[in-house]
Length: 404
Image: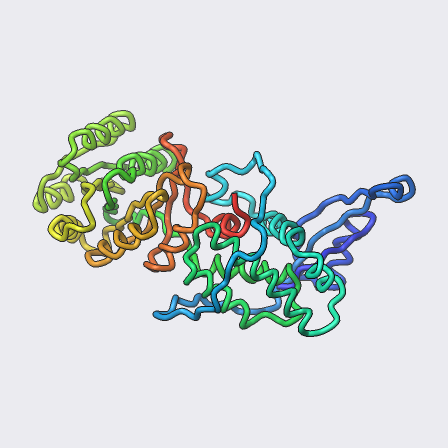
């Protein structure tokens, strides 16, 4: 991707300049008015600056993590931490949830702040090299300084060093020696998005009822998450929804789901065995989607995991979806053990809860890379049905690079 800035007296003139140089396929990513400063403001008029971009016809392919990913020499946070300005418009919903701004300028908004901050953090010597490159070595030094800052930012957001090194090594191999900061940042941004993949959300087949199982440890918010998703299907899409709960170990969990069922006018059935889920399949044959709440089980207990596997396997694979619900506040080491344990029994998609209780989202990226499971939803509060949205890869990339 080529990204360039153009200035003119009017927005139309600036766009014409961009189209003339970059071609008809150029897209406008950002528009702003620049007012002259100092004494010159008495004699000069404001100008319009646009940022435009055009694809270089590079075809990107998703690269699955290798068993032994390439590791760069150990990088240390040798440059100052990046400090971000407060953004009152940013909240957890627009950080992680679906990005409603589909215009090209949304991409620039995600990258422009980091670019400005990277420039501020460059040392005087690095700035001099950037402004007046005199040799290939100077250009290389500039690129390394920029890459080091971005690497530091990924690590500060708790991205695993293995995956941060993998991203950087893949980018460095394809960068031109005289690559601008724009191109470096855009390349890493795109690489993160590609590795995150497409979000997988619940879909209704329309032919047979879809059984959606929610599995995961105790206390991660499975029941509340079910209520949020079911509410949206019931109220927004007007589909027939039913609840099953196999969480008979906690009376409070059954009563909580029963309360939501009564409010939404959704039938609820408590099941205690594999046979009872077969009976429920016949009982709810006229429904569109059946949400199944399972008991929170320890990932260390194989017998309990086997119980869940038997329950899920009652429903044919083409008629079910499985979502592993994880808390974003759980330690990375524990998340690794949990996901590996559940991977032994079933394929799943990933839901992350409690995004409002953490300041870092690196674990979302880490677990996606580790499991290769699709990301689906994220929750960021207790309000039903509002505090949930589908995970958006662009917003994750934005947060990993830009910070809080």
